[in-house]
Length: 552
Image (cartoon, one colour):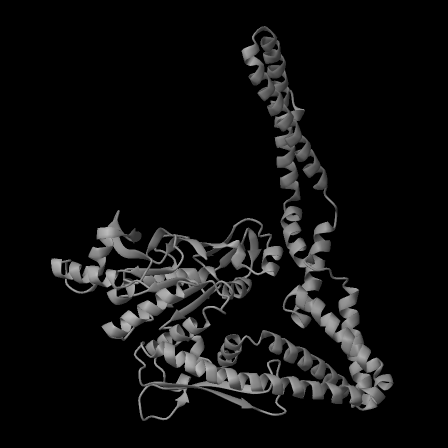
């Protein structure tokens, strides 16, 4: 779960610390108070596109830090980023030029990596964003997750990769001799070009790190020498002074035992200074000027840059291109030896692919009916009493992909008597949010994402439906940490923890404050949400009734 979110200089937020609890957490406050800014900041921390317009007026840098449980990260991510403790910290900054820097557990990472990692940590659902339910590409994934078809998907992907590789080999074998010879010449040139560079993983980053030391070598050496002289070389150095003091206090300690600890402290200090002097000496020796070294590194960086442009964009992509090109070259050079067995292997691979695609298609048809029934039950109380939902699964024979040969689309009709149509064409933003809420409830036990964020999932609904929305969110809170921005007391009353977001003036500037509210403060906040400029006895009584009746 998300343990803390620290936001600095983000829009009107100067410095706010948000520490959500497990279960359902709601953010309430007046329109424009800054509730959605907290959600935007979390999205930015997890790799979303940023804007320099977010930078607080008069500041040069904004920063967002998000701390998550280490267990929420995949084993691969924990190993890759050295996540050993109970928490992992994600930090992202942006300066006034729009340039951002990102760090995961102290490791510098790209925004793309944060986005990949963030997809496993937080699932965002906001009315004003292009939600995943509106994208047909997500429907297949949702259906398979509901049905627990991970093993079947893996079998299809493996069979597809085998079939694709053999198809590529078959296409290569059908080239004319002239075409094959031209392709072999090109591949040999490309493979040799990459091989001759003798690249190693991460080499470009190492060169980037070494460049400043070479550019500033003389200055670094001068400063290191000066520091070493102060510590050790010259008369009156720190080490010499400490040695003299140590001997004097040691003599005192023989006369007064109470000074024994001071004598030992001076000895430790002298040892630390001498060790620092040795480290500086070693550092200085590594800075010995090597004529031509800077030119050599710049030339090397230019060569790597050229290869990145041709085979990249990253160095890892260049190395992957070398592997792919080498494999193709090997296939072409030995195509004659393979021709007689290739057709048989391809036929067998196609048979296996047909079989696994048919198997997963049949499983999807069964799960589609189950999902339709489960979702209809969940959304009945969310303002969809007469709505219809259907999952269309069509197999396109011969149209193979890594996920099989199926096209899956969610169909929806909100009004009785109307025909089912693709969900993306007929569902409004508020309807999509509530449908996603119903789906999340259905998927809660199988879903691996630990944090769910709903930004105004209750938009455009009445009080009765809002109460059902709140109950569903609280139900999700049994399995996941849920963060929800809401304006409705019928939703807020279901929260385990409620936070009040408000604007205030301080030193002539607008600031956003965040307060966890309990007891009478929460009662007053709910009463104000019910209507009126101030909480009254009647509104407090109504708020108390909401709280008393909001227990799962």
